[in-house]
Image 1 (cartoon, rainbow, N blue to C red):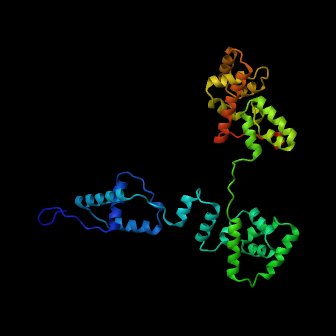
Image 2 (cartoon, rainbow, N blue to C red):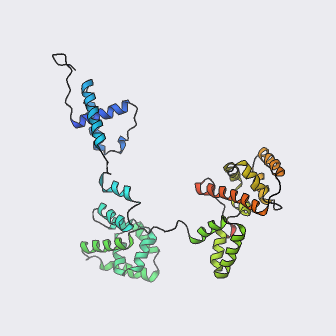
Image 3 (cartoon, helix red, strand yellow):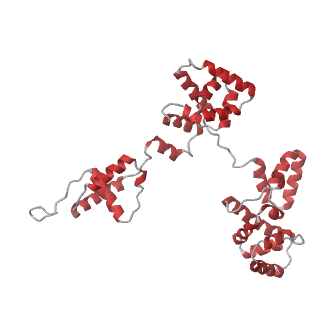
Length: 338
């Protein structure tokens, strides 16, 4: 807007007005802004500033944009706002004990909300390991429904002693209760992170599933001689080519077929030799047209060696494992697992 001499002048805006102007420009440009993540008061103030902004001349607008770009270029890093956001950012990198202490700070120094959020079985473990007086205080600090569930997990005589000890808790000082809570939080509040993502029988079963049959059979025989119970668990975790009819539901068979290149699928189906049950099951759960086409291609294949047949079957097993890992199919439980 020009002054009396006809020369445009720059309008003075507050930082809040400048912020509102930048938001308006970005929205006008079609940018999506996560304003809903801001505190309500900030959203309200932004709305007020935008409503009172009025007409802004081109010179002022260009100056605000230049200032915004300059500040943006000078900004090296924007850290998370507040301890809660910082904990979320670092959660996967902190030690369990450090995370527990930060959670305690976030709860205002009161450790009991964090302890009360522990699973019922972990709370029952505290009752079974600590003195009955500590158990009585812990039980008293839990929400009533959770306290009832925890009490149900404790053996009769111990449960009676803990509940009787509650009669002596009336005179306990608040500082003592908080000290007990902090000590429990240090000992039990850190969630143990498993080193492996599955139990040993499952891990070994997956390894043997991907192994050649000779290796698999030899290892299982050795395990049976050393520990028959462990060997049985491993065998239940093994998923072989012959398990397909029992472990993969008929509606999932087309997904398996689509997951493989057709030449690999044909070779795997031809690799069953005289044992046609797997091939018949797979073809029987496809469309008639697809089944007929695959059958023709299988008939045209030359005979395979035992090693070639096993390699072809392993390609199908790899496809099955990838489908299971992605959640596209779920294996049916074996009868002995039910």
